[in-house]
Length: 130
Image (tube, rainbow, N blue to C red; front, side, top):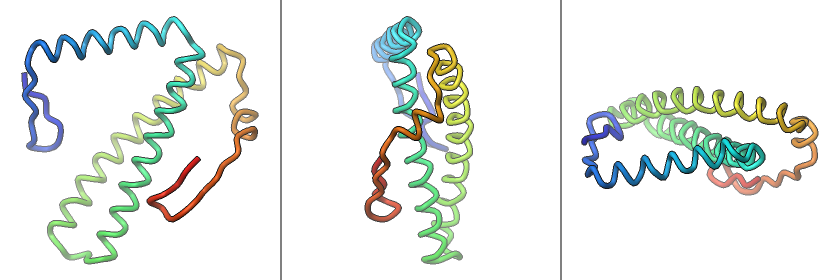
């Protein structure tokens, strides 16, 4: 089975690999559904990872555009990044919605959680640590 991993780039997966991946995904889904707190924490981590990925792509686009806004390779890369960024933002909104639902179910106030965290920002846009 072929899976498109990027425009025009395909990964051929063997049936046994697909079965293992599907089984692992199903087990993870069952675990997360059975433990809302773990699901909440998992979503928190995934949201953070997705936000960093979006920020990195946006930073890359900015750097490429500032370096040479007329370079056809940069223009193509920027266009591809925009598609990925848009898709990731939709995924991010879905995760945030699910996290809010879980927070309501668990009785967690998201504002209080946010205010209780200490944020440390170091370095430039490539190095943001929370």
